[in-house]
Every structure is written in structure tokens, then in C-alpha cells.
Length: 342
Image 1 (cartoon, rainbow, N blue to C red):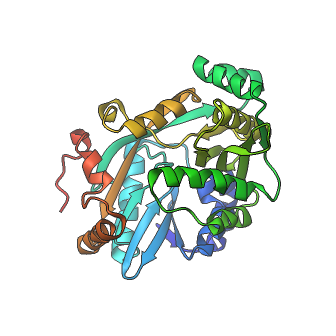
Image 2 (image 1 turned 60 degrees about the vertical axis):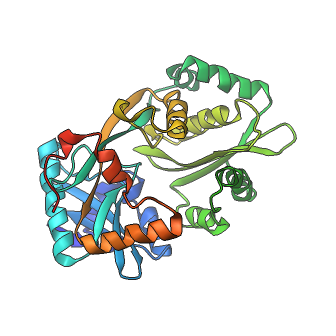
């Protein structure tokens, strides 16, 4: 197995292959995270390549898996992917590159390391290629189509360009965080996305007839997949505004040649009914999709003491529970967690 922590140090043949991969293997994503002082490590063998984003806080190093391994061959079986993930975990631990690794909700892992704490996950998908706008609309749930058309009737207009977009998107998103009593994202966060990912990010905002922003989205994309990265609606937004915005954004990506959209985030049936907010968001995303891809979420702890420090810090700073989502959600999936994790 080979490893590099510089996208530009990857062999040229691999960099060419990554033009077929999702945005989390792109040059832009590497530049964006370097700009945030985060490291990127790339692991590969003859079968797969995987990117691991390392976040450092004092002595703690967490590895984030934004995307599943990119398959370099023709065999992408559960067993083969697991063997590759196990090799990556051994190397990360041996070289002390991270104290733990964990998946992000945008990832689509079809396997997991044999020593991981695992839960059943997934994502709603929408296929864009070989569709007209009307055919795309017909793929969506009937109630969603009605809301999209209502947004049109209400005179909602969509903008994909202009210096005002970031400020207008933030204006809408700030209302969401204020409703939830959470800290606001900085304008620099959005400027960094646009600056570092000019060819692989898209911001769109929906405006009412008075020119006021009602809803906004931020997507990351390459030809293979678009990801619903951020999204927000104003506190008293026009009914149908966000629906119409998302539909038009899907049409926009389709016209750029993007094949699919990942709406990011899905809970399997065994976990529904336990969190009203999550259930509501899930039902909303479901109305846009034509497919559910069931995947796995997981974490692997390499330095248990450091991971406990990390959880304690989250308890104190962010008022979180000591038990993280991987431990709590994994209890719903004993079939994936039969092994004791030392």
C-alpha cells in the first residue's frame, strides 16, 4: 500500500483516474482543506484509493472520511473493500496519522473495517443524466411537484451568479441557526468554498417578488455526483420556495453534465420515529429522490485515551453527550457489531 499527503504528489496516472471520481478526490477539495489547515492523506493499492482528511486540535488528531474508497478495478465487493479498509487502518495506527477515523454522512461506504463501530446508514439519490427538466420533475413525489409549481406561481426567481449570493445565502442560513440557538457560520467559511473550489461548487438563492432571499443551497460536484452540502430556508419563507430552488439546482447541475445528486443523510427504518427533526428532514429529501443507497457509517479508535479526551472536550464546549452518534446508533445494528472493540 502507498500513501501520500499531497494531491500533487500522487502518480500522474492516478490523478488522471481521479477525474472520474467524486468531488472529495478533487484538486479543489484538497486546496480547500489545505486552506483550512487540515491535512489530506491518500492511501492506495491496486484496487482502491481512499482520501482521509485529518483535523488537528492540540494533541488530538481526528480522521474524517468524506467519501468511500474510489475503486481502481472492476471488483468492488464487500469483502475486497473491507480488506482494503483494514490495511488502511493498520497503516494509520502504525504511523500514528490519526487517533481515530470516522465517516461523514455524505460518504457511501458499502463495507466497513473489521474493527469498526458500525451503524446502518445511506443516502437519497436522484439520477440526472438522460433526462429533460420535465422528466426530472416527474421522478419526484407528487406532493413535491405541487410545491415546486407553487413556488413558480408565487413568482420565486433563482439566481446562480452574482457577488451578492454569499451574503444572501448567509442571511437565510443565519435564521436557521438562530432558530436552533446555535453559533453562526462565518462569511469566511463560504468565501473559502467559492475561492478554493471555483469549478466544483455552486451557490444558488431563491428570491421573492420583492427581491428578498427566501432560501439558499450550496452544492459540491464533479461530473459523477453533486452533493447537497448546505441548505437553508428563511423563518417565514414563501411556501414552495425551497422546493423550487432545489428542483432548479438539479436542472442546473444536469445541464453541466452531472450524473447524479446525493441529498446527504438517511436513517434506516429501525431508527425512524426517534428524532422528529431528523425525520422531517428525511421526508423532505425523500420527495426529491428516485433511489435509496443503503451504506454504512462507522468509526475506528486507534488511541482510546485521546478519543476520550475529545469526547470530554465536546461535553464541555459543545454541551454534547459523552457517548457519540457512532456508539449510540450502533446499538440498533448488533449484526454489524458482534466483535468486542478493545
